[in-house]
Length: 124
Image (cartoon, rainbow, N blue to C red; front, top):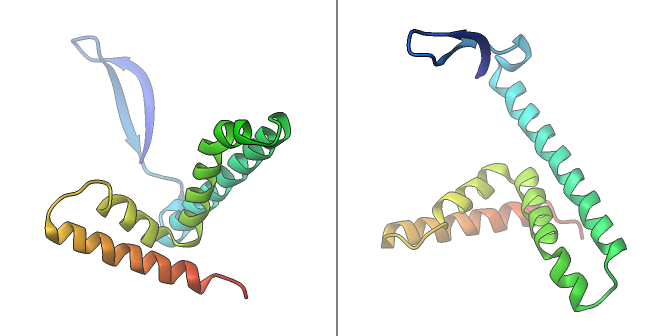
């Protein structure tokens, strides 16, 4: 949704916001999905550059591993989400906490689906 601040206020002093319709290019769910994928790819590129810079700044060894670990993990998760978005989201949501036996079973199924998806994109 696109929200436009009209800079007006109601009787109790709160700003009023009006919801506008999204631009025409986002009305089709396919175009919206492509836009999200492009945004995620741009985020991956930003993380890749940050990881590259971290490796350039920090000398090799355990210090680099520690300093760059969060970027390395974030880039890996970002790339998996670009390649297998539905499966990645399923794993993220179903495997985030212990839960019931059913949820644990669904988590395992989601992990298997993600593994299959990633395998299908591997090059030999």
